[in-house]
Image 1 (cartoon, rainbow, N blue to C red):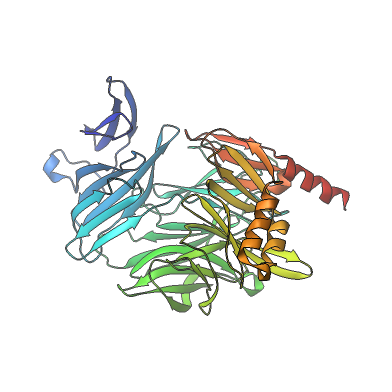
Image 2: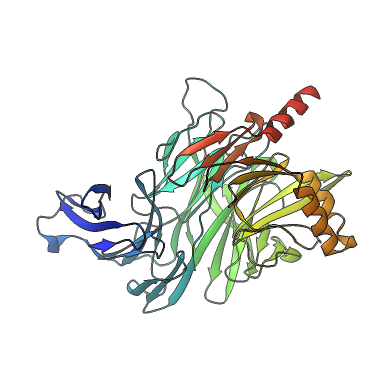
Length: 475
């Protein structure tokens, strides 16, 4: 039995016919939710507990009770599962395996930081810092499907919000990517939402550095109707031997060819951005560039835009040559890049959030602080949209930000003052407390928000509506 530090729930394992479940009760004894078992890989359930091929060793709550960790020991090795909950549904988001060994020796959540985890094995001691990421398509009109992918166990729950608004834990389509209790390490969507890439563990626990990389063409329906919402087609797959991959991104080349960039470690010293191209249904390595450890790839609104990579110190580099183009004051886990036309030139704006602080920068310019209370953001259409802990959604025109950044020769303080002056006139709208942005669909004039309890709400902000009206008048 185990208590969540802040949840007030009592949990425990329950043996049932052919499986084991995790059941949660309130302190008064009222049964609330459960995690359905099925950890065993055996075709027939053993009659004796000693014959099972796994053992649940221990449960670990994060200090804020938002993440439940389950230490499972299989005959071939250990895994550590990370579960989250929303709308009374439990999502298996990530599975971690020991590095340098097949067994964990110790597992420990940080007592003050709810998303920091320590995993020890006989071969390594690793510290993990987690953040929530919304995997959504970022393209503007007319290709803004508003496709969102949610990882749940070995599936990707896909919903194109321009066509359908399906509340979680349901989805428009469930795409199976890996085995039931081995969710993908990371997934990525193209800017249009039509292509999906997934990086997963190989099913065999004994295989070292074995991962599966796959690319799907979702063939989504783009308009109303009674037809199937999408018809996914596997267009490329391969088993790749990498040491410790953490992130992938999609890139569109010439003649509509697609490639996948994989950020991974080269041992314990260096990292690498490896590139895999699709050739006759297989993903083959076509290049790579070395980088530092623990960096991150930056999402781009256009798939053909240059690849950007952010170091752990917040420096931003061009991904092909690793030449430095700008920097944030600190590492921003959530970051996006967008191109804006200004005075006949293309300005690349990079937006990042670190510990609720929102920064903007562009190529060759210094970063500028925008807001200290940001909880989520998205770059959509001609706006930077973000929510704040003051329970407001703010709509910042990208043109105004680009104009301010272009005047960086006037001094960093002057640019910050100009952006602060512009921010005072940006449109704001009150939202429910704790709301976070899921996606925005400029052509439909709406923003989809998720409430703390997990349900969705769609709003139609005035700036997005006026943008569509202006474009229709200009036709």
